[in-house]
Length: 143
Image (cartoon, rainbow, N blue to C red; front, side, top):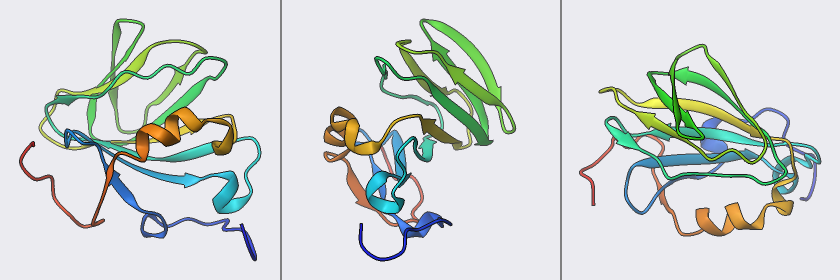
């Protein structure tokens, strides 16, 4: 990080990336590299209508979601929880979890993990395989 750290983020300040299967999009915004964050990593995550996401599990880390758009489910250790815009989801340490958008509109969530991005290379490695897409692009056909 050089110069002054970013303290206010706009979605267009960082790349919007899409999973190889076209079901998920992510904007990793708050990182130690972007703003010097030492205790949190955070970003915006979008789930294509009618799709389930990949499973995640963070050993030694809790995670929070704030649902800001749409409705669907968040599955935590095989239990599906209904969610809608305005809900906050707490994912306990070590739980297997994933969003599931069973609606016909995009599900959007803000995610927070209480750890430095540079201390989570396994997540960064997975996301490095995703492709950048324009911020104003609509969901195309599934690959």
